[in-house]
Image (cartoon, rainbow, N blue to C red; front, side, top):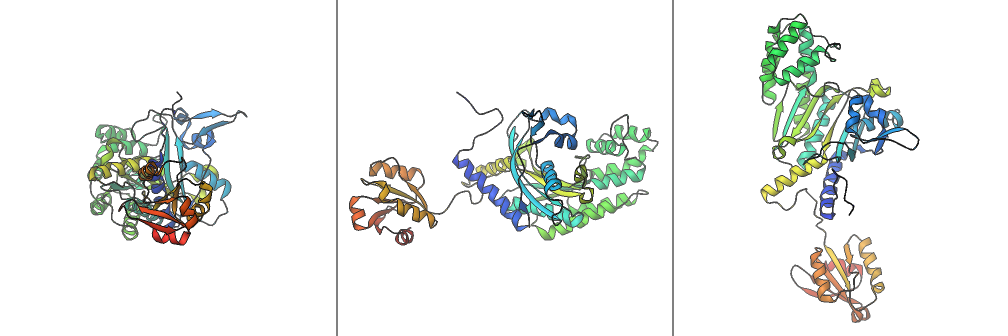
Length: 444
């Protein structure tokens, strides 16, 4: 028996209702923030991703050659394809661009719960505007999306790559690549601070002719924990260091103040001033959302300000700002929280509350009732037509099993009289109703 490929999933109707409800909810919030949906091909040129992430990424890709011997790959993420589309199709569009997207991505890696070889990503990009207000717009959109979908107990962590970069630059570390390590000393120092490797940091400072004691305020900075209240002690620490700019910290404070006006307060907000991830990609504000119910795979969303369009000949549009939302992980988190609280509905709106009418032809040619079925559907009524010629008793069981609200049984005498028997399956009440759209809709 042929089975689905490893690391992929099938989605039966109940699962698809949930997924469509979440997708529609996210897109509704995005549209209210002025974002418009775009779509890119499932496969792209391999060069698109090696240019962004280097040749080492190929081992994680579903890369192949087509019949024209062109090097292609199934897309592993959606940001680079959207940037490629902007450069190719939207250079002359009015800026800024507010773009949303959703689709399948593919990575060849060992899969586990929350991580699949075929996975789904929702994301947004704000292109052609940058700075604290643009960053606040992006974070606010993320907060409003998670709030709208009913996710609980999540933590928003916000930082700014520029805070540490400015501090380390002020101390005398270079942003030029060190041939012995393959990365700038500033990046090396940031990674060591993130790991809490004091000995490695002291060695790095000494190697570059700096007093290791100069890093002491940075260690204190790394120990700061909390929300916006961490900004003042951070400002005092940075001000005590000669030649250190406070520009990035000022920008972050402006972003946080704007965010408080644009979105509801998240369940938990943490300011992380020593963020060290994405150093080759992010240039300014960075943020992520974690959900404790998911454990080690707890991150459901991440993004920030980055430079990427210079790779496509559009340096004037850098930096951009955006985020990617792990669609599958958000669903897993919602399902875990719904199960813990005993809720039946996981995603708001996943259950269609409109009545479902089961129409049951009895000893008549179904063709005689088809016009009414078509007219009811055209008027917005959900209608399922019994297709297997069951006897009335079994047809009633079928109607109940599909979640029908009411049944309409139509037999030969009903056709002659121009009426059928409508039954409310929740109360058991039944009565005759005229076989026209207005009468049936009123009875429902």
